[in-house]
Image 1 (cartoon, rainbow, N blue to C red):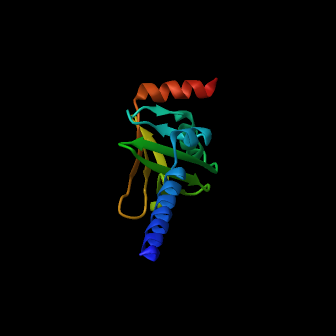
Image 2: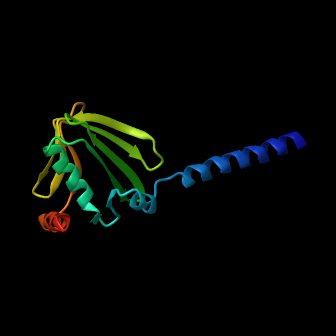
Image 3: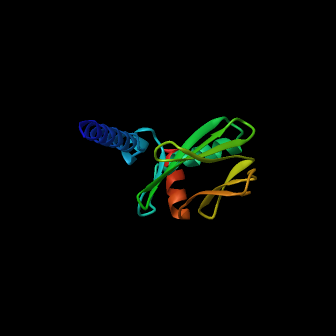
Length: 147
């Protein structure tokens, strides 16, 4: 009986420790802000849009660059990591705990009518939507980039 009680307590502690570690390692808005990510919050508001627009410009100018867009929606986190090597865009989608969900290699990135998306991607989808914002927000962010 003692052995069984000990195993139950040890198992409970191990399970509790693992679940707490997963939560502690979860990507938060604070971490994303500290890392300089472009953020999409629960209400769909986009902040630090300038980072993503600089990446779009860098791809158009064939300059190596990278950016992370973190979406915090419905209590779920998706992390969109993109890097441009001067030739193609490498895309990785991760969960808030860092688990890789998918990846693709794309020909480029496009900003059109408030939609920013990867284009010419290999895999299941030819285009991958990254973020949707108003033209007003894009123009406002571009004006801030000039200052």
